[in-house]
Length: 171
Image (cartoon, rainbow, N blue to C red; front, top):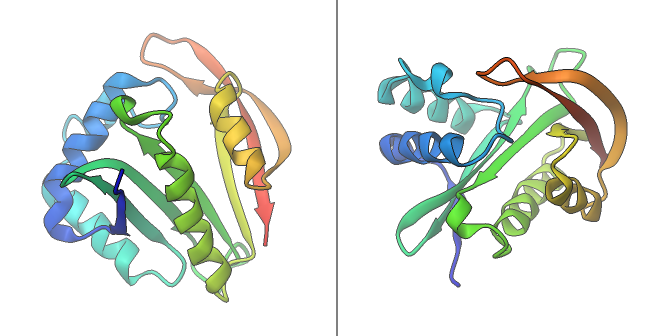
């Protein structure tokens, strides 16, 4: 497997948006829903990608396999002059056909390498569904600690609630 991990480019906006829509239909583990994406445009996605590319702490990576985007990872940063400027929030998904192939691990490695090299980033945090044992185990292998538990954090389109585990990695 020859996974290429690269910074997202504005010209990939349509493919990234299509990939996100597919991921949302395959898994309940993502915070975004089809309702969020219903009126979301390629122009808005291009703008978002450009924002990540100009951020001092934010990052959007794509994992490309055989010319196709199969994973997207983000580090959502804050204004470096704010009181939370030293933190980023990690988000990632891998399309279901590519689960259990090590793609998530490679994507997280690339994002954490970026964090270690970035002088502004001290803490990487994330939230994960409490019932997503595979993801929790993966994050723990990277050294993330459980720092909290949030009941009814997620609410799906059917009105069902899910709890979240809050995790952080201190660099």
